[in-house]
Image 1 (cartoon, one colour):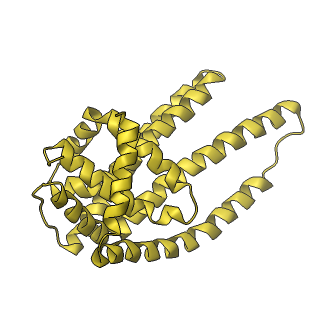
Image 2 (cartoon, rainbow, N blue to C red):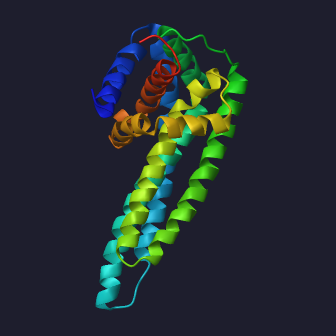
Image 3 (cartoon, rainbow, N blue to C red):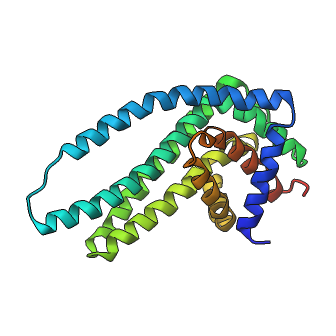
Length: 240
């Protein structure tokens, strides 16, 4: 079975897992409601930014028209990637106590002994972890800008690199609960990412596209947390 097929199967099992009991359903629906409030706040801000961007004018020349088309395409693509990363970051912080409880159940189910964390510490931990990932995201994105010194192909390489970095760090957000339950230091978390990069990319790709689906994207964070927790527990010695 390929890594992508295994990830899709894990997501299916996670979906069944989180709706199996009343307690789990409540742990899923509570952060979904909070995410809806967050989304209602972000949408007007995105509309204002788009309106401002459209008001910008360039010289009336053929090269400006081509530049506008290319810049528009990559700007939209980059905005989508960035928006999903920020959305995932905010939702994992807001929903940390709920996702933490789901992660505990998921890891216990596959046979792993985990560390319980209080709700206040859960949110503080999630915030600190998200800030570290955010800083790493910015540093890596700034480094990828150097690709643009290569005419034409450099922009494409920049976009591909930015996409890979974004989905990897996006998946790391969802593995955060499992890392915390196992008291894993930040460097060890990055080492886990490098060691299991193939399976993590295979996990991140379907999660990324699920986050693009309206309405469904609100239940994707808890789904991804459960799947990531199960994958981590199995990777470090939980029973299959």
